[in-house]
Amino acid sequence: MRVISQMGSLSVAEDLARIYRELARREREASSGTRLSRPSTDPTAASLLVRNDADAIGVAQCRANLDRAIGELQAADGVLESAGDLLVRARELAVAMGSGSVTASERAAAAQEVQGIREQLLALANTEQGGVHLFAGYLSDVDPYAPSGAPSGDISGVRRVLAAPGQIAEASVSGAEIFTVAGGRDLFADLAGLASSLAANDQTAVRAAVDTIAAGHEQLTRGRATAGNRAAQLISIADGLGSRGAVLAEERARLADADPVQTLSALAEAQSALNAALQVSAQMLTKLSLVDKL
Image 1 (cartoon, rainbow, N blue to C red):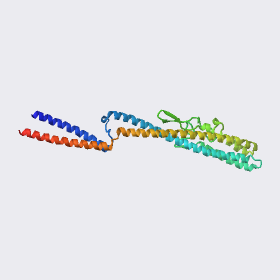
Image 2: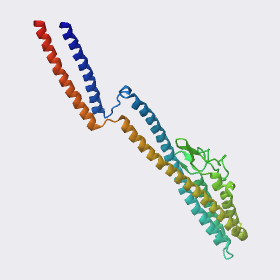
Image 3: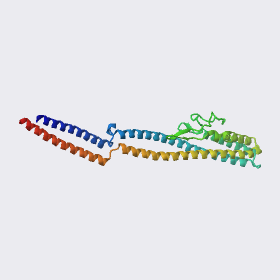
Image 4: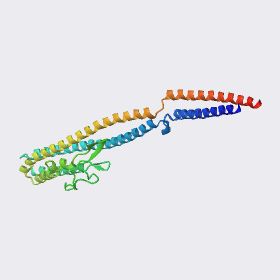
């Protein structure tokens, strides 16, 4: 009889230990809001969660790449708009100074203004944002154009970024195709030529410059359109990444987060089970005490 009673006591003790463990788990879930405090809680869900989090990190990195590239392309678009305004003014001067009624002193004054336009254009071509020169190709950490207007190196490259998992996208525009003869006209040389013609009071050359400056403006416009199109493409990819990120966040919540209602219900059930087990234990101890007296 004593052996049977001791076996019953052992069984109650094991039940109590199991119930205490369950209660502790439910309390952790309620306090932390997660049901995967340990991988062993649900190995399958834990494995899926690791994969989900790795995907989320990749998406976040791509989104950071996109945000930076979009900012640079939009900045390039604004710079090229300003550059286009400068060439519009240079062409206006070429048209006005090509008239036979203009004096040499007026052309000399216009030559100074065109020289200033060239210097402003050079500064725009060397625009830097966040430590990156917008029109330097792969040489993004150096000024792409010397004061003479000559390239500092190979500026024809177009930077690319990992825009989405498995997807590479163009993230800059070619400074060479925008400002140099690689795109059709050397804008710095054309402005220098116009300034020289004005200073020399060469009416014929000034008139001829009207078309070359107009061609340079078209070249800038094409570059600006390229920047805008690439920015729009990256924005579209970013929108898709935003949706993917939301899906991953929802999946993470499904895998890891504890449902508040279910957690509180399970906690209450575990507490009730513990109370019941304690009552059984108390009854068992009472019986053992009676047996000992007998």
